[in-house]
Image 1 (cartoon, rainbow, N blue to C red):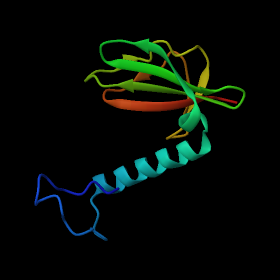
Image 2: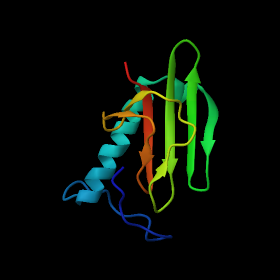
Image 3: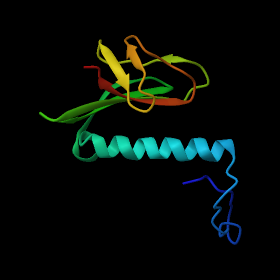
Image 4: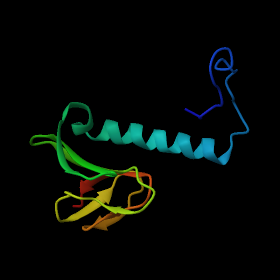
Length: 120
């Protein structure tokens, strides 16, 4: 996925772009690659049960759990301001896209999504 330009028909049928990607296209490709690796590495993302942990007007925090195997937490902020990851259990987490370690309470930057696993 490179985020190629396009709109309604017939503008949606561009030739595949094979080079000269913009910085935004390269970033998007890296994000999608990271999410694909995350999905492959965590069975809970494929077969787990979702449980809502916290909801506000701009945030949604939930867990995906495969009992005895795997658990991840997802925190979404659609707002234009930073918001707390409400409902995320206390603890230390590894953000699975960036590899950053974070401890609760966690502030979500505007318009972001984090995927966490409990830090070892």
